[in-house]
Image (cartoon, rainbow, N blue to C red; front, side):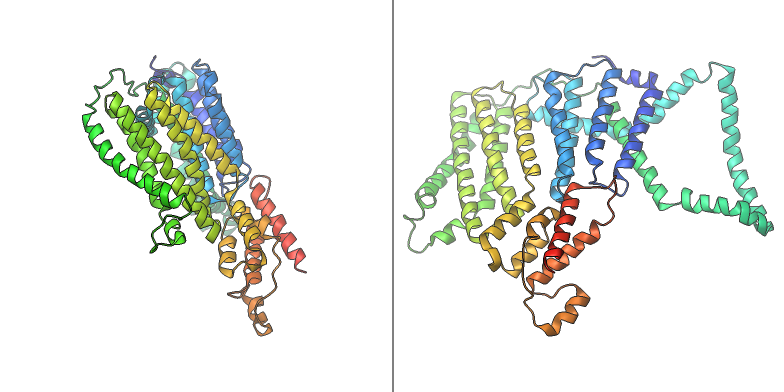
Length: 504
């Protein structure tokens, strides 16, 4: 592979201009507006910048990489459809990861990389971005050194630039002195410079715009420059794997315990508690342990992947890994079963939806691991990327807060407790269209109505709590424009207006 950094130096004006244009788009998108309608557009701008970069280097887009682009764009669109902070944060992480993998696959031959190597290479790329902060200045200086001295016009431009740098401080000093000497001059000219100084140069808004432009500029330039360093480990020499005897030993010990645990699950949990000892109730036995089991399942997944990467493969180790994976499936089923019983008793929450979603995804991830146990050349990283992307898109577009509110209200109806209403009202605005259908009467006496009117709501009153929540929605969504427009916020505002209209 050729040394691409030389190309960035030779074409410094193009790449600096491209990065600056991206920085301006970045500032337009995120200026006091992180989740507006501009989010999918800045995602498209990022992909477009990467596309122009690849075109400049003559690197054709690989057909197998298009789904990374589609996934990133769908996550950008999803951000405009939700106000859930957790989802928005991981949408951003997902977009950055998909774009990173897309560009790495364009520059490097990753066919033989296993999961550990892929993760290490991505981390290496991000670490290489740190020293590349200096690359825009280095590339510009190198370009100017080679091209600036070619003609007399460049020399004249140098003198003009030097004159501007010398003249600016003198200009400000003279204006300040003359403004203090003459009041009319101060009103006519001095006020212009004072406003320029206070409202532009040191304005908080201008500072934020400059910061966002610089942030967008440096992030895209450093990312592209780090890609072209051609210093990523290629893993050409495969390291000798360790003797599998150690893995067989500790896996045998752990698997024996897992088999006992799985037998207990099948005898006591999945049978509905018919065989439980008398001192246990089925509710007490089932409504616990799902988070511990979830952690164990994650540990099992990581352990199997580690064993495949570190130890030599033989038949006994493969059998143990397959049994180990089978036990993991039973643990996943046990955790899901316990969570389902818990939801039946205590209804949904965002965390419970997240656990169920993760368990479903874990089933498919473990399937890929099992295939990798049997077929060593299986592309586990690409499979896991596809599974996680598809499942996360389902979760992101599923608007879990709205799902939680809809399920809990359908199960409890008007008998829903004040505590549950407080929880639902603290969810993101995604839940507002569901909550707007609630119709509660005030549950306090008339002598506290004055307090209600002055404070917004009375503790313990479900209607007061919803009134307070929807008033907050109206306050937070009242100033959306073409740049800050957000679909979920708009739907929440419409729901709030409908709620108050229905209360009249």
